[in-house]
Image 1 (cartoon, rainbow, N blue to C red):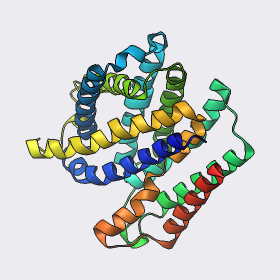
Image 2 (spheres, rainbow, N blue to C red):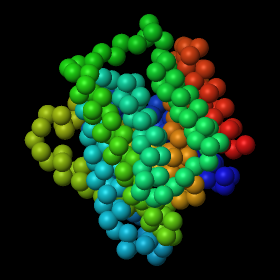
Image 3 (tube, rainbow, N blue to C red):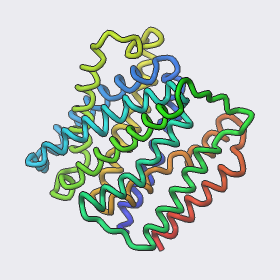
Image 4 (cartoon, rainbow, N blue to C red):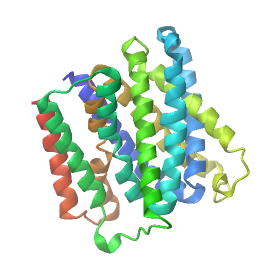
Length: 295
């Protein structure tokens, strides 16, 4: 496996983990939808400026424009809206558990749509890593701290979470041919993010309470929302797309899905409460799976 692709996928996990922790407070104050809207608009503005200044548009394969549309509609808008709905009903931990199903879905679509075939060792390593991530998510909080409650039908929550996972996978798979054809990952991230920001802003025009911010926006609060958005929508997504261009889609996604594992020591350091033993076991499995892929 190309070492740069591995480093990029793991860097994406680190960015998502740090960004998720930083976004916790502004998410509670603004709400998930308003937080994402602010982050997408600011990230799109930064990406468009950087790509324009660096001349990154020259390498974009515009013949693949449907891929950019699909990535925006499915990978950004539909995935986020479905996840918002799941989070409102079941909390962030269970929603994250459902969203992690994008790993096997991406691997399956990569095989069916792109004809990718992983080796037995890679499949074994990906499976072990995926199981480790699931453990880290499921037991990342101690039982006495788990106050998540399911509001409404659990079946609806599962359907929404799987919809978000599938939409995320479709968005990634759609972009790979454009990346392989030479489109710069940063430019692809800019197009994906800008399209998603535009569509989500249009959705926000619908006068529904769910799309309104929970508290009044202040410059300080908006800034605290923007910084983790840059980590996630700019750095993490660009790193993931770089890895996606170089290796099989399933491998790229499973290696960049390690944020829940990386968050374990970060949460311990910030709260002083160590995760459960099963969560650490999940982290160990994830490391073992990555080692097997690299062997």
